[in-house]
Structures are given as C-alpha cells and as structure tokens.
Picture 1 (cartoon, rainbow, N blue to C red):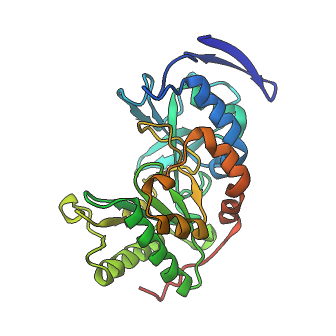
Picture 2 (cartoon, rainbow, N blue to C red):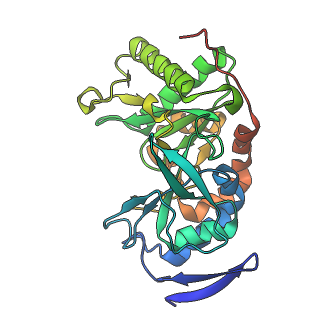
Picture 3 (cartoon, one colour):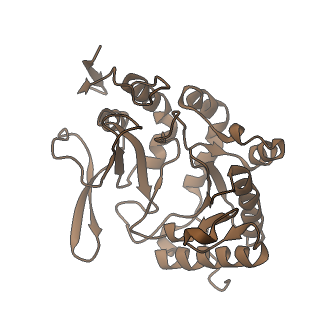
Length: 303
C-alpha cells in the first residue's frame, strides 16, 4: 500500500508514499508516522492551535537530506488555515497552522517529521505566552546533567513564585517552560530575564552550566540557551517526533517523574518513543496542559 485517500472530519486527504521507511533501519514507515500523529493529536493540538508552524521535512527519511519550510506550500488544500505573520522588518510570511486533526495529518503526509512553533501565537507575534530555558548538553555532558540543571532552575523560579514545566527535547536535552500572560509580556522581557537566570546559574555552578553560546565553552557542561526567547526563534512542539535514529518524541515530564528518573541515573529512561507515547500521554500527559491556562507575570525588578 503506497497511497490511499482518507476522509477526516468530512475533508478528503490523499496520502502518498505510505510504505516509505522514515526511520531506517528502525522500520517506522510513513503509515506509522501518520498513525502516531493521529493518536497524539488530542494532546498535541492545543499546543499547535493558533501558532505559525515551521516545518522540518525529511522526504527520504531521517537519514537523508531535510529542509525547513516556513511558507505554507501553495498546493495546500483550501481548508488549510494559515496566518500572515511579519518576518523581519519588511517581509510577511504565510504560515501553515495545525488547528485540527486533518491539518496535522496533511502536514505529516508532507514528511514534516518535526513541527516547530514560536513562543507567541500568530495573532500577537510580539507577545510570548511562555518563556523557555533550552538545556543543551555539550560534549561530555548528557541528559542527566540537564535534569540536574532543570531542577535547580525550577527551584530558582519557584522562589520567585513562578511555576514551570519540563519536557524532553526528544534528543539529548530538556526544555523548561514558564507560562506567562502574553498581554503583559514582551520578548525583551523574556530574553532579559532568561539571560539573567542563565548568567546567575553560570556564576553559581561554573562546573555544570554555561550561558555562553560558543561551543568551546560547553564541554562537560549544560548550555542554557536563553536566546530561544526571541520572536524569530522556534522550539520543537511538545509531542513532536524528532528526526533521530529512533522515532523519539519531545515528551512532557512531571517534576516528580524527572526527579525519580534522574535518581535512577539511566539516561535511556528519558527517551519516549512513538509506539508508547500516546498511551503514556493518556496516563501521565494531561498535567502538562495546565501550562496553557496560566498567565504568570515576570518580576521585572529582579535580575
């Protein structure tokens, strides 16, 4: 079976290359990719809704060439929702939005293995509704080091009465998100605040953390990438697949589970694969949706 037509919510989609192995030699075909996004949609769509998508497409699978696509393809179906969002000072880009299941499946059929979203919704692109600490391990460091840093960041934020949420990157790192009130937050606010936190962490834990972008400073340390808090940047969406050897997922992790997993000192336990992700989301993933309804404010006097 290399192609077929399906109907989702009364909309007809033509699916192609269904036998294509997207994760050689794991054996995860495009059929399984589309099945995954169909199953996880109930959990993922709230985090995609209203956001301008950047697609990361792998037409020949994860071991071959890929490309990023910001502009929504011109051959999109008439029902595909889009957003006109400023890009730079003079450009406006028409982005795809995945506000429903049929849109998500259509994008998956384009071999959009990874879905990346900005920190702000398309109707208010200058006002982020969350701040992120992107924890990226340098050579010699790993996800267990990221977990240690994430817990320290959590405690620091908690002392400032800010609640935070963690997810795996789906690769080697972790992401810590702080939900915010977009009506009272700018990217200047989030970038200034996150950079100050990163600098303080670097000062207090110089053997563990760096806030410097140059790779030579990252060896055996965790880089806190505060620069992701920018209108021009995107982050991989929660529940998105990642283009690595196995169909790994960027997956939510509660602080309790993160502490437990970190104490077991088995980095493999942080990896969640697509075949188990939807069942695990049913069991544990619902807590993460709390992030969407929180409208916290940054303490502007703190730095």
